[in-house]
Amino acid sequence: MLYRSKIGGCFAVLRENLYRLLGYGASICFNAVNLMLGGNLPPFGSTCVVIKEGERYLLLEHSNGKVGLPGGYIRWREEPEETARRECREETGLEVRLGDLVGCFSTPTTSWARMSTLTVLYSAEIAGGHLRQAIEGRPGWFSAEEARRRLDPYYQRLFEGYLRYYERHPLPASNS
Image (cartoon, rainbow, N blue to C red; front, side, top):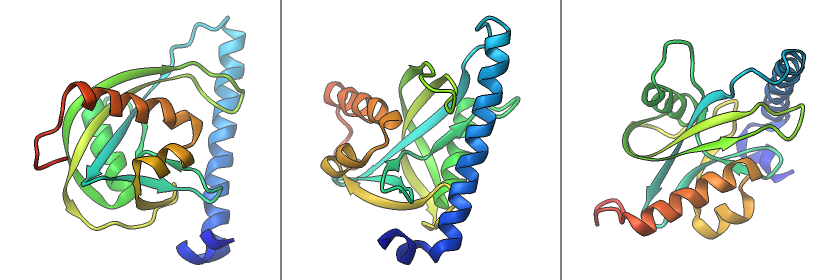
């Protein structure tokens, strides 16, 4: 598989798959408890960040060939803005300066392996750091067309929401 040669061999793929399996386990446990409580648990809060440079977008490439946006779950006593910056740093190696709050997206669970989330989506620009691989995947720059083709379905709504937002609120010339 081309991905293995690009990001560090079979160990990196195994590590990513074990990390994903842990996430599935947590989702199954959460959904089971939620079922026992009559569906009364709230969705998990999360954030995602869209970074655009020129006509390219920073995305995380996963071993299954899909890509996703940098982001993750909000920690206890953490503000969404802090989560967005932390997740971006952890997943890409980059420090970011947040721009607009693009929107909030509700994603009810459709599978035992996923948790319901309420995701806060931000635009951002790079403020420092260096791109590096993380357990979540390999960061890379993608055109809008390639992003649409390869985005994991969970992130497609978020990305399309970002594009719609900036059709109505154009970026300044320095960011577009």
